[in-house]
Length: 179
Image 1 (cartoon, helix red, strand yellow):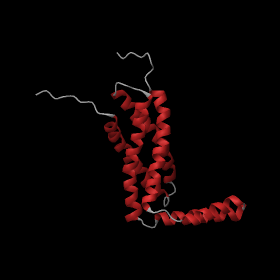
Image 2 (cartoon, helix red, strand yellow):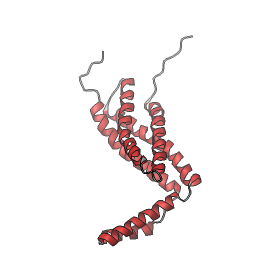
Image 3 (tube, rainbow, N blue to C red):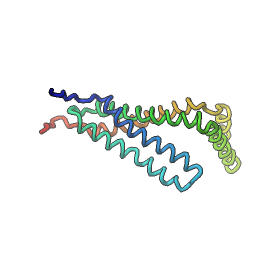
Image 4 (tube, rainbow, N blue to C red):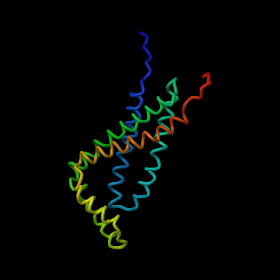
């Protein structure tokens, strides 16, 4: 029996590559949490942040090599999907952490930010720091699901901008003939 060779579509490629990027995001999140207690991990965290565009470029390059049509729209859509699926996977891990492992984490981060703004207000003064303090106090602490959704939307937004830039540079030129 001859097996049929079926090409994957954009969504399938994005889910596969997004899983790997999502696992990297989870590792980055864990390093970020640990860097609050172990400051030397902050350097590793910065390196991981710098690695995100490199990994996304590599995965987009692999996608472009696997498909026949390399238009800006297809590559951009792949990039948006890539960051969306990666953010979904890491968002699930973040939710478990915020909700079950360390339920006070968001509350602690909110109060740490309020303390920092109070110190800045005392040192420099000004209406800006006062307004920031009052806005932060009025908004309250995010729930775990709100924090996860804002992280997902932020990741997808910045990932889509980065993917658009990648798509412009990775598209196949108009008169290109494939050998």
